Length: 170
Image (cartoon, rainbow, N blue to C red; front, side, top):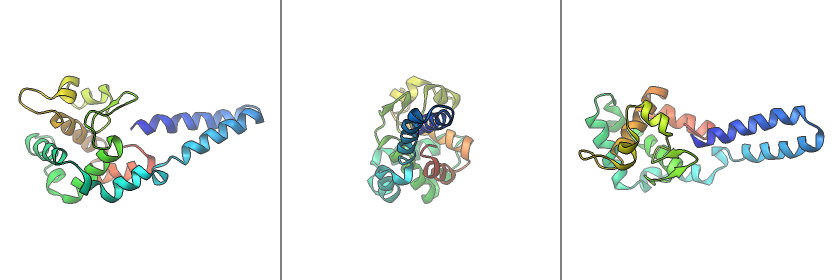
């Protein structure tokens, strides 16, 4: 998701490049080209996540995905029971946060790299998402919010991962 803002900036720069003199235009075009080369297919982290995320995912991620999926009535059971979907979720988490549940990048947080407003739009409070609660450990609410976002926006983890591969964000 945080790659979305980089791509938007590059598009603005490309538009401006066409409207501004050639000296600035060349600089802006070079900047836009550099950003385009950072697409997921050119990113070694994307390749590593695509190839080995399932093997390298920490056990706690699997525990939280299973607990959240099985406990939350609005999450499809297939998000856990379908091994392909589990793998797609692991790939997204690998790519977005390198499996760091306290990752923080430009206003995006946790395993799923969600903004505070997006977290709350999925019915999870910031404190629950970041710290957990008395009844659910840290990471559980991150899985709930992340999986609800995937379900509501893409329908399936496979569709979310496909979007991540194509655009560098989900």
